[in-house]
Image (cartoon, rainbow, N blue to C red; front, side):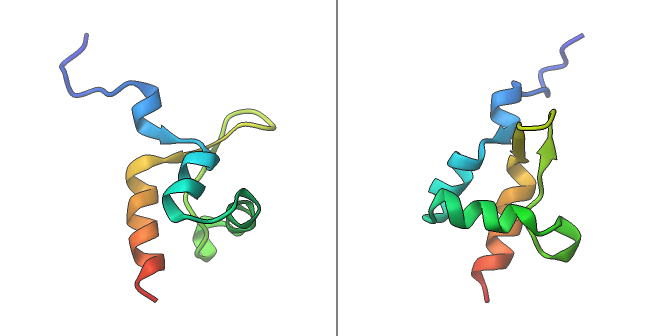
Length: 70
């Protein structure tokens, strides 16, 4: 049942590389951000297995706008 509102998974999540590119920071810097939990100001993230991190697109853009206002 597709009501037309669902989006492909690739459109829902960003990779860490895509997020770092958007923020214009190195991967090393972005991984430092990822070490901080979202509850303490880090970016939102989902882990799929041990080595797969994805960033929810809409939540990331909200977080990035908050972070860039400082």
